[in-house]
Image (cartoon, rainbow, N blue to C red; front, side, top):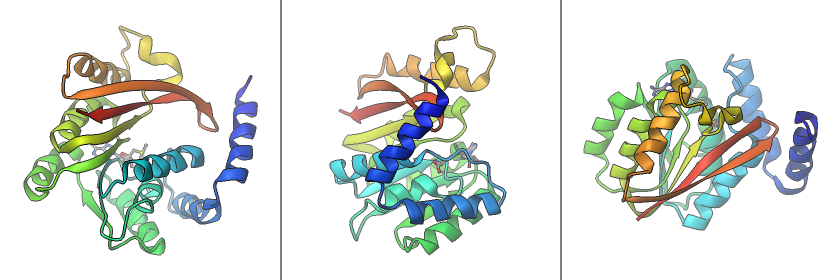
Length: 221
Ligand code: SAM
């Protein structure tokens, strides 16, 4: 089958299952008006994050890569009243768009955006956030995935769920000598995981409106 079919199937599932789609489409519209790239997770993936966070009963969520807050809103709307989501974003323009969308979604009290390159904000986060996270979603610059997965494990509670997006990249993940720094980052992350006793992981290939890709799903032991 083809991209056309994958998109039609996503549209069909979403029309049947994603009751939140009007509100979530508003976020995408606001992002496109602000000139943000449409590299958010798909609606089906966003809903999956929401469902996983609910399965986990997540109360403290960490996200790396906010963009306009599309996935942040999917995740934060799964939180209980006293839940909290911290999301790390390097771009002021993206953070500003996200702030607006998160406020509009009524989630301002639950969400904090930490502005700056994540490798710079992680150390301060480790100092200020004394309670561990129970759900982590990594979706920023893929070349830094090795650093982000280590921080995610360090800042997570036992039993925490970790999801890393875009680990397949049209199958390029198997190109050993790839010169693409994103692929190198993804492969270096898998090298770390192959020898990391603190975490139990799998990776799943996906097709859909965003093409052929996949995600890593892990639990902290
Ligand atoms: N998770 C978002 C969603 O699904 O709605 C999409 C995130 S987008 C794929 C990646 C984001 O990571 C961009 O907004 C980009 O500015 C941000 N980013 C890139 N490098 C970063 C870094 N070093 N630290 C933090 N964020 C970074």
